[in-house]
Amino acid sequence: GLDIDALRIVSHGINKIKTDEKAVLLVTHYQRILNYITPDFVHVLVKGRIVKSGTKELAHELEDQGYDWLKEETMVNGEAKK
Image (cartoon, rainbow, N blue to C red; front, side, top):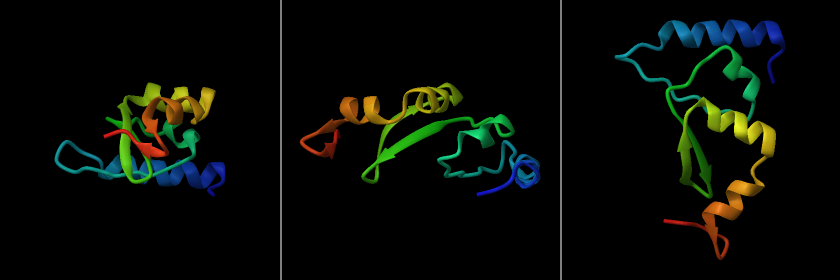
């Protein structure tokens, strides 16, 4: 994990390289980084499949509610819905 100072430094670096011509793929379970980086998209993967996509608001929902609601909504017989 990153302490708050390192989080700011890393976020600043990501924001500097992110442009309309350059994509950044950021994988995190740490919602706090989204206080410094605004994603264009948020995708949730379950067992290697994208099961939900949205905006930064989706990340806030996950922070508030956890993942259980999403698992119930997107799983059938233990497998991610296609």
